[in-house]
Image (tube, rainbow, N blue to C red):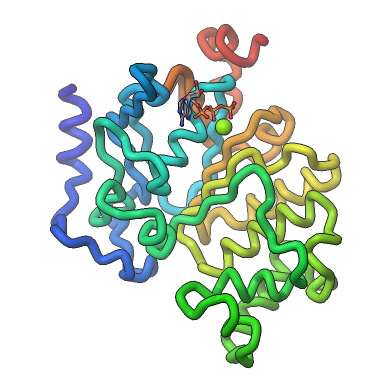
Length: 277
Ligand SMILES: Nc1ncnc2c1ncn2[C@@H]1O[C@H](COP(=O)(O)OP(=O)(O)OP(=O)(O)O)[C@@H](O)[C@H]1O
Ligand SMILES: [Mg+2]
C-alpha cells in the first residue's frame, strides 16, 4: 500500500532502539511528528476469524477520540493490542516515535504512560477512596508500604488534585465499596490519573450510569483531553454526541469511516452497518 508507505516516510521515526526503555518517562515521549499512537495494518486472528483486519489508526497527542461500531467490530481487541494483552499476527503498534508496543509487556506499556479503564470498575471496595488512589500510585513499592508509609507531600498533593478532578473531593474517606456505580467509574479513572498517563483508553465508561452521571463523565473526559489523549469506546450515541470531536467507526476489524459526528452519521455505510439498527 503506497499511501501507507508515504505516511510512514512522512512520519519517520528517527531512531528505533533495539531495547526499548519502558521506564522512559512519558514526559519525554517523542511525538514531534504528531500522533501519540500508531496502529498500522494490525491484524488479530482468533482461530482464523479476523477480529482486527489490517486496522490502521492514528491518535494525536491530546485529542479526544471516540470509537464506535457494532458489537464484535474489534473495539476492545484494539485496546487489547495497544495495552499488550493481545499480540497481533501482523502489523505495527507504536507509542510516539520510538516505543514499539509489540516489544513491550503489559506492565511496561502501563509504566510508559498508557492507562486503560475496563468496563467493570475494579476499585478496592474495602479501602477508602484516598487509599485507592495511593494504591494506584504505589507501583513497585507494593501495597503494604503504600498503606503504611507516610505520604510524601507531592503524593498528597497529587491525590488532592485527582480527587478534585474526578468530583470526589468530599468523599476521600468514604469506602470505595459504598460509592455509587458512577462514582466508582470516576474513582477508577482517578486511579489511572495517579500515574499521569499520556494516553487514557476508556472502554464503555457510561454503561449503567444515570443521566446525571453521564453528563459529569462527559465533562470529565472533555477536561482531560488536551493534557492526555483520551480514546473512548462507547455505544451510547447520546453520550458520544455530547463529547465527540473526531469519531472513528470500526466494522469487521477495520476503519469504516472517520470524521466529525455529523460526517459519520450521514455516511450511508455507517447507517447500514451500525446507526440504522
Ligand atoms: N480471546 C478471544 N478469543 C476468540 N475470539 C475473540 C476473543 N476476543 C474477541 N474475540 C472475537 O473478536 C471479535 C471482536 O471482539 P471485540 O471484543 O474486540 O469487539 P467489540 O467491538 O469490543 O464489541 P462490543 O461492542 O460487543 O464490546 C468478536 O467476534 C469476538 O467474539
Ligand atoms: Mg468491547
